[in-house]
Length: 497
Figure 1 (cartoon, rainbow, N blue to C red):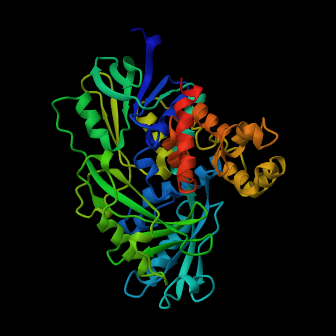
Figure 2 (cartoon, rainbow, N blue to C red):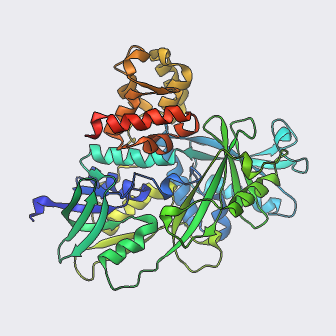
């Protein structure tokens, strides 16, 4: 195999870390192959609390560098992807017997100032006895604070990074598993198994971004060694019919020193989570337990005027955080920071990545390439928009109004959804149409064949689940018949041939 046939980087894992590295490397002119055994972002990266945030609670664990880097990245990401990332105000009630007021004030002051906040409004105190909080929260809660963080469509963030990487020359292959790694002095030979059988490829460097499976990839690359670097911690969430009116989120302190979020979700719902449970089973089988459901409901029932039960939830999801095991006893205090392990002792390099957060994925990618000596030229990913993100973050409503005027025949709810999902790429879906009849088969709601074709062609969607639960959350809105039409379309679609 010649150097012309050899990739500079083979990235194993299509979660946010692998996607971010692929984008950065491709933009620097490197020859990149990313392989993911399932769909992009189909595990940890689509099971987050869906926040781009500094991590307010990390301050009390003295992780100041992580919080500062996260706060700086929060505004950078808002700048490059304002269609899928947007500001959200969080209300933090003070509750007697938990963290004292002075500590909360100090933490919020640091949170406002550590990261050089420019785009987001500052913290302010709020009277919880005023509307709307008095209708939502229990009477004992009278004072609190409101601060800023951001919401993110997590699985779309992964897909857009891979889309951008692909448009810059990266080879992105989903449903492709690395089943063999053979090391030589100057390169790796990898055996890949996909829908069309097995192939072998050559790469100068392997980046192991396999998340919960990072140790298993190391077992393949370095047989005979003991790889036990991970602590797998399960986080689960419940989705309820809308629990309160308003665009604000709540952050509730729990009596075990953890926190639980309640966040407006998909217009009609409230997302509540998360948990921290040590996980020792197969990450492919992760699911919420009855104990976690009870824990989440008990936590928010301490605060909400109207109680909920697990039976009230309409959906749930769980993911496994692949944290670097720093041997702390409390799962909630194990560092969320990322850790690199670069091994080049026996030949070609392999870089393994442990931990990390969605908020810091872009910085992690830069640091990974620096670690490998591949970060030539200036940093570029923090100022170059992701696909569809070439919008002023402060003018999204103006952008929506312009697209509404252009596509009024599609209806305001549909146009807003597409603006939020695709940003300026909405024109690639609706731009050639003059009415609904030009969009192909109607699947249900505001989903048409034209959108499915776009997702299959540009965002690596291969089946209904990819579309309904990762590229979107339309699975919460479409009935069974509509979801079956989407599945049938993928079976017959020529784009998959």
